[in-house]
Each structure stands twice: as structure tokens, then as C-alpha cells.
Image 1 (tube, rainbow, N blue to C red):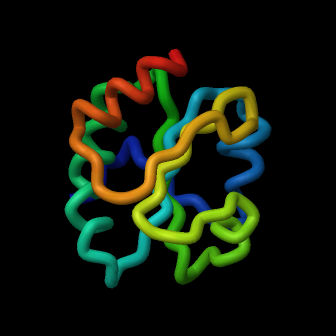
Image 2: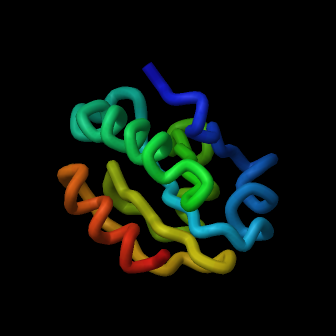
Length: 109
């Protein structure tokens, strides 16, 4: 079950929630048919809860929001991009463990 701490991002709210906010954010680019995306989803949900107040967490369904994926060079999914001060600061492609993602996030806090 998706956490209520995870934003559903689209072309209408991506700019405001991620770019303009200036917050450190983790954005998961995914698709419903992608098995590794489904595997990492509960990890992303847990991170959203654990980092609440420190990191904004959102998800972009690439099937419904292709233009955002293209703009950020997402070629494979899952791709997770860390945004800091409105700019893409880091990214990981493919399934990663929770400890790997936390280590990466901690570098940007």
C-alpha cells in the first residue's frame, strides 16, 4: 500500500512540488508493468515515512507522464533521482536496497 507521504507527481504539479520547492526530494520514475519498480515501491514508501520532514518523496508514472521522464533523461526504470535546490543532484537506475538508497540520500542532507 502506498504511503500517504508519497506524492503522485505529474506535469501539473512536478514543477511546484519538486523544482520550485527547493526541498531535497527523491523521485521514483516507475511504471505499473515493471517488476523491479513493484519490488522497490515498498522501500520508497518506507523511506518517505522515515525521512518525513527531511526529504520530499514522489513518484512519476512514466506511462502517464512521458514528458517528465524525457526531460530528465530517464531511459530505464526504475530510476530514482534526488533533487536538491531544484536540480537533479544524483540518480540510481534499477533496484537498490533500502540501505543503498538511505546512504545516497544521507549524502545530500
